[in-house]
Image (cartoon, rainbow, N blue to C red):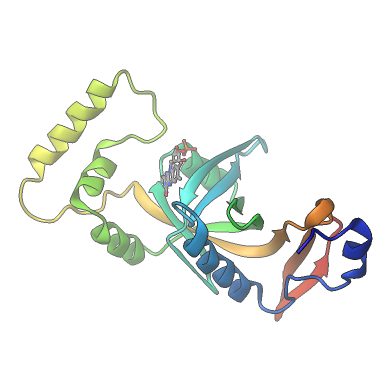
Amino acid sequence: MPNPTPGQIARVAESEIPSGDPLALFAQWLAEAGESEPNDPNAMALATANSNGSPSVRMVLLKDHGPDGFTFYTNGDSRKGEEIRANMQAALLFHWKSLRRQIRIEGKVYEVEPELADAYFASRSRDSQLGALASDQSRPLASRGELLARVAKVAARHVVGSVLRPPHWTGFRLEPQRMEFWMDRPFRIHDRRQFDRTEDGWTNTLLYP
Ligand SMILES: Cc1cc2nc3c(=O)[nH]c(=O)nc-3n(C[C@H](O)[C@H](O)[C@H](O)COP(=O)(O)O)c2cc1C
């Protein structure tokens, strides 16, 4: 079928982004990305800011999502951990190239319950657990050799028995206050719908692309 012309696009009046529950729509788009992305469909950019409002952004992996929010795990003493403690407002961004879709999520970030962090840490591979113990994430490192020596030292101290979660390794959950779904449409007449959380649900509005 030939591509539609701008005039034909203008006559497609309905948004293709449903106005129902944004959390259900998120779950659907993530599942669809799981079918089409070459790797890490759960990878998301996490934007934080320090107490002066200076922003920083990096990728993390989404490990859980639901009505309570979006959870990722990291070193709580890292730059992102320090920024979250200084300023709990943060934003997430998913971009799935294979689907030409984007989701933006904004809200406040809270540390997860210790039992939850324990359970997730226990589910990781032993090598990942040892790496988490050995790494002072975001601190200056003199050489790769220094890091490998620390991993070897930690491994020697944990030859038998389970590896316990170090206190600095933790999870954070972003509670969504705003979510925006974007999908590519021909001629840059893209489709955007923004959802805002209210006392008893969500309101939504379309946005100019
Ligand atoms: C695809 C991808 C996924 C990542 N997932 C995580 C993650 O789940 N947790 C984490 O601490 N770092 C993850 N990283 C590394 C971070 O991007 C970052 O380098 C690290 O967390 C330090 O960030 P900070 O100095 O801003 O705290 C990931 C990197 C990539 C490219």
